[in-house]
Amino acid sequence: MEKKELIQKALEAQKKAYVPYSNFRVGAALLTEDGEIFTGCNIEIASYSPTICAERTAIFKAVSEGHKKIKAIAIVGDSDFTYPCGVCRQVIREFGKDATIIIANSEEEYKEYKIDDLLPHSFGPEDLK
Ligand code: THU
Image (tube, rainbow, N blue to C red; front, top):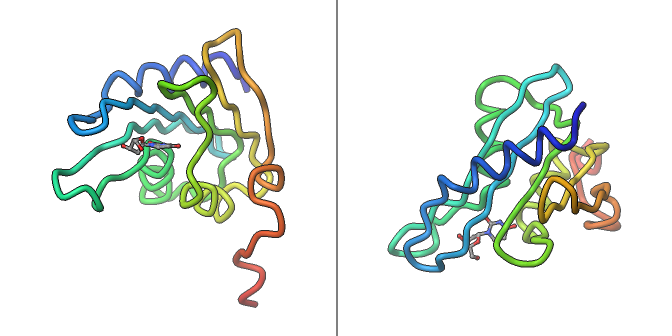
């Protein structure tokens, strides 16, 4: 997997952000275990609560197309290293327990995490079995 390629795709997706209320643009690109790439941007709605983050857009696109295992996800935003919100961390936990999470400012400047770094002591599917 080429991390820079995934970051590049997240940067491309970020351009598509629909953010008339916050003007804060986020892009995400993920690689599935079976080698497919899905991208997403944040989409804001006038009544605010239906707003969806870039990460969940990308993940729900992948899952709804039958790809449930995330190998890596790159995230870019308008702040210095934009980290996923708590809700998105839980969603990454569901479909990317071992995924590499790439928080990027650019193709050259990025940090890597696992979901256990960002959501320690998490609750997940195994707890319901
Ligand atoms: N946002 C994301 O898309 N991902 C994140 O990780 C943080 C927040 C979006 C939601 C909203 O459209 C805007 O950024 C400001 O919160």
